[in-house]
Length: 139
Image (tube, rainbow, N blue to C red; front, side, top):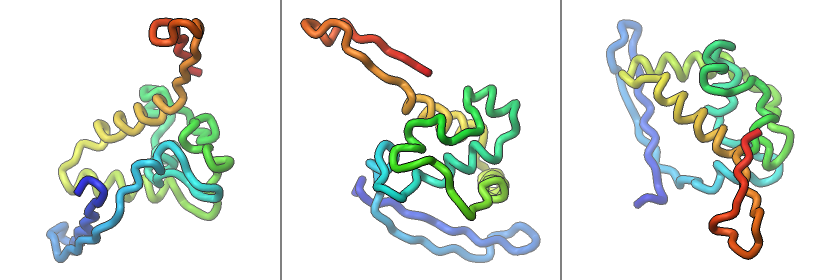
């Protein structure tokens, strides 16, 4: 079902060999990307990305370090996540991606695209012909 996802935790020994794994099934929260309930935050990877990438990589992806500048990260509040070490979590996530043979830069590009797309706004310019008369703004 497209409503459910699977999370696979892969465990490695000191030599880097797989020593175990487990799978958890969970409900996908597609709406959580664009709208959070009061007091909730968006997916952790977004905050980790902004905190963990170096300034050059952020600039290349057209991102800034301030989560408050992204609409998707401030829908339910300030976008500030107290008590979490997003830099170290990002390092662990990045390392895990590499270990699994993923290409982190490709994943980060997609995540950056999602964050930037959330800041795009559309304004109807001609009420009589809204399909052809809209203004797109990107802050």
